[in-house]
Length: 197
Picture 1 (cartoon, helix red, strand yellow):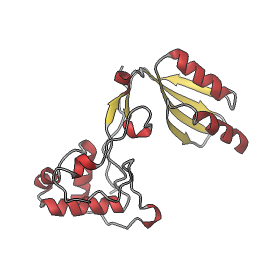
Picture 2 (cartoon, one colour):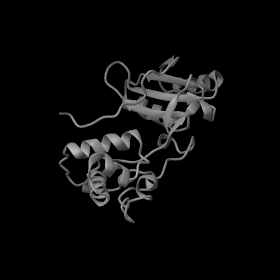
Picture 3 (tube, helix red, strand yellow):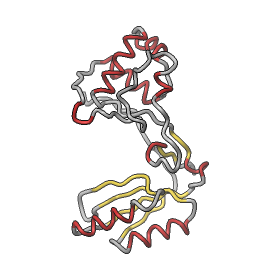
Picture 4 (cartoon, rainbow, N blue to C red):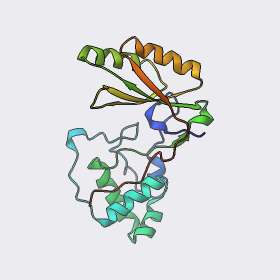
């Protein structure tokens, strides 16, 4: 079983890919200056509104499939010059549409063969805070989502063993009751997306 995760989720598991691979081979210097060291946009509330067209959508799809493509190669595929592609990518970064460039890694090859989904109940704000305090202690927790319904959170965990998973579950249970499912096989981990038409 191969569990695939995005490296940027937890730096302690593996480090984020720099945005440089997309920029360095063909883009003008400084083209990625609006991304912080984690590869995410640092503009915050100052992001610019950018109206995307069909060419922008094609560029986004290409970068989602392979963020190491040069601007020259992207330009060849969308029939634009290298500077024109660089400008479009810059606008997509500044608008916050492109938030980073990351390496996709195989968690199993890094020693984490167990992938688990844990639902956590939290009836009160105090319980929610206690749950978050527990989750922050474990680097194996790679995703945390607040959800509607009976449970307060759903989290994704990768661990090297059942013993370690059980240790995490026991710690969570001290704050709020968890329900755990171990993933047997992943059929779809990500999909290239574009704007709603």
